[in-house]
Amino acid sequence: MTNYEIARRFEAIADILEIQGENVFKVRAYRVAAETIDDLEDDLATIHERGKLRELPGFGEAIASKTADFLATGTTAIWERIKDSVPVGVVKMASVPGVGPRTAKALWEALEVTSVEALEAACREQRVRAVAGFGAAKETKLLEKIEAWKRLNEKMPRRWALPLAEKLATELRKVEGVERVEIAGELRLGRESINPRRNHIVLAEASTPSAQAAIAEFKLKNPQWMETEMRLQVAEGEHHGSNITAKVFTLRCAGGNELVEQFMKELNWEWEAVPEELYDWPDVIELAKAGKLPKLITEADFKGQLHEHTTWSDGTASVREMAEAALERGYAYLAITDHSPLLAIANGLSRERVLAQLEEIESLRPEFAARGLAILSGLEVDILKDGTLDMDDEVLEKLDIVVASVHMRYKEDEAAMTARICAALASPHVDILGHPTGRIMGQREGYALDIDAVIQAAAKYGKALEINASPERMDLCDEHVKKAKAAGVKIAINCDAHSTKSLGNLSWGLCIARRAGLEASDVLNCWDLATLRGWLG
DNA sequence: GCCGTTTTCGGCCCGACTGTTTTCAGTCG
Image (tube, rainbow, N blue to C red; front, side, top):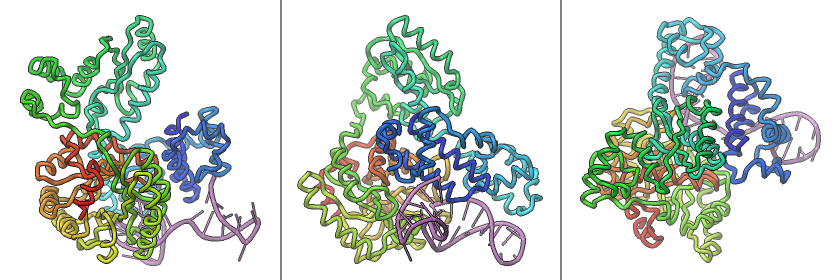
């Protein structure tokens, strides 16, 4: 089993134990193990061979032994024992934000509902309010939560779809004689979420008849890919030694044959020069003909990252470890922006701890400067209910960079939330608005917000908006970024890394930036250090 | 189930909100 699969399996164990009412700390232990695995740079198999499983954070005797079982046999005793004890649909019910394990278990037992759909029907038929501990108000709320969840899951978030397609691609690459495998369709266009009912093609290319036969056999032997959580299909490409075939498939899948024909007719073969992320632009053909396509930003343009956490708050790596990781990635600068005090659950920094961290950063600076990395001091400061900041001006004044974000009280109405965020942007200390809409892909809609007003405020005060590149956020979306660019607002693309590994999550933000037509000059962290410092003031 | 010990048990990031069981459990960030 892969790291990803084992992590998901530990999460599944946690989900089931939680519904069974198992000790919350035991449940957390499994979740911590899954998080640790997700943060690993190395394969668990390799770590196991070196006998180092026990050294991983959150890996005790039991978790290490279960991990070894998964690696050796693909399963372990506890999984075999509990996997069928709670219906998959009940686990799904518990995962709907606002439902939770207790509610799911209670309603499963009282009403025998075993799917989100059945729960929804029970709410509509007013059967939930009759259950002990529930009432009419709770039933109405529950229905609202389910409806929100359904809206969020009409499309499958990229963060879930891409790993599935990549897994299929990995398996295809192992097929004898296959020369090239490409992920096509909506994923290839960089869309933040995809229609799971549409066919998502993974293209496998092979020139020899025997290899083509092997691909056909793979398809026959692996029907599970074709109709699981999303429809993945394998298409055999003709072998032309170019990427034309892959692009045609990309278009066919996401844009339909009409778009292919239009591209071919209007742009002849020059349409190869059109970046795939721009295929969804209605005026892409006109722009291409006029030679006015943007020179899209690439990963190579990045010179640093500006929103990172460490063990000072809720990160898993120290300032030094994060700086080392940034150097390895070839960055020229890295900003350390831990949480502010009000975010207690994330171990937010009091003013004294901010100053203490600043001392640590200053002590590390000479060594890293000599090696080519500037460490910027900063803070991800919470925007309070009234738009003021969760740290006093005297401290903020000392920092190189301030990211301001909303983490709590996000259920305010649109006018209040817009005023709150615009007030924060007016603060002279704030440089970047972090994850501007607060959405979590597939789980939470963003706060009620007048994004145009926020963009105008950012333009007025000369502040940047963030594309938060963590896969679960992908916040802002491409349409909003396009509007921001049109208004002359600068963008920061930030990994919001809580570990050295998540410093490598840039691609999730990059596809948004490219779909929005951003060029390197639009993005703060593509500037050289001197230019950035000049802008930060 | 993990962890760190005053080394084998007792604590495990915590504060706010919500509905209702009206005194606290469930859920969230």
